[in-house]
Image 1 (tube, rainbow, N blue to C red):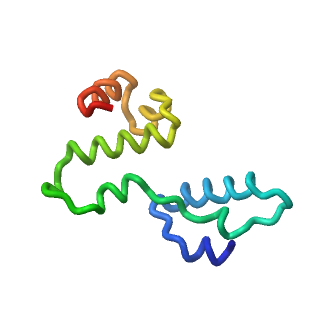
Image 2: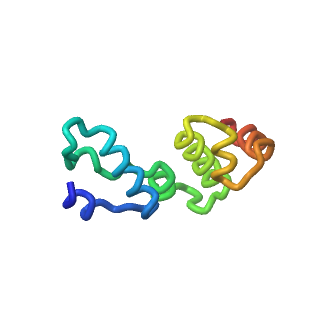
Length: 101
């Protein structure tokens, strides 16, 4: 498990690592953490931004991807996603409507 932690890329640094370790501890049955339990999850925002597109610098698509990722991370709780994005709920609802989310 230690080797898996060291080998994985943690794009969100300490927060992602802390969440992965917490998840691994909760999933361990006998107190022993397996390497598969601490694998870094793929980052949907980074994956969406890394894919080549016709217009690679489209801020609208980037904003849509970030909002969608925040909603997934907070299990579609709009209040929590808005707080994580630094927006009011109303502002997040307006942006969701703009992007068809």
